[in-house]
Image 1: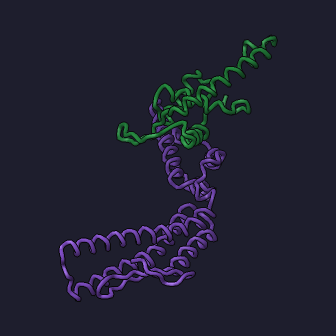
Image 2 (image 1 turned 135 degrees about the horizontal axis):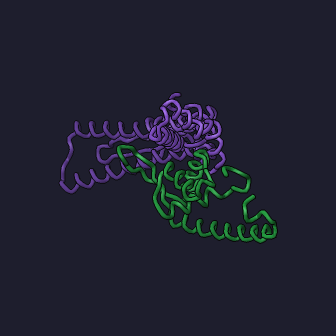
Length: 209
Length: 114
């Protein structure tokens, strides 16, 4: 009799909303338990096939093992219990958080560079300023365009791992991409100072720095 | 006894009681229950692990992985919250057992087992 893989039980638990990490641990514990039962039986003189059959019998049917875990609704993951929160609100929060963090880092970095150049009395060359602008624009592209895609990929991975319905995954990805697509962030150098503008679909450009 | 209807809540009580005395992993716990109840109560593996997970989720137990003889085991131990829950469950159990004992006391076969 083969070592139990519990694949069918794992799939059932995942589809019922149990978090993958908990399913892995439950399966791991049951496998270890099976090994212990076999070891105990063989140590007492039982032949290995008989010991494995006995261990299978002690563990019980996979459906029963799944049912007893599913009898505890509190063990369902937050994603399974509140998909509207994770894929609805969560996707928006992820995009806004990515933008806010990206912007905060950028503003802090620009302030630091500005303070240092003024303190040192350094006058950057036009070539350096052009390259610097390019670097800032690259960062802006990263936080405005790549971060929402990253958020969408993250939601996809969570959804697929936890066997969430395609509808919820689609909603999460759509919100992240549409929200991300509405944002625009740019930075340019006027020659005397840098200007950063941020715009979203529902408001006009306004300067930040 | 395995799972008669009046066994509801017993696995939780036994698990908390045994883990309050010693950190154990699942197999060890199943064996300890069998030994402590002198084979009167056999909790199936299908009951023990989900109860352990549920108690841990509720904060009554905490777990940690430990390498023993080359194998990683998940050891469980009772938290302060679990100790309080054990106290409450033990009190309830004692109250019910006393009440049932009183009710069954006048039955001639009550003392010899049903």
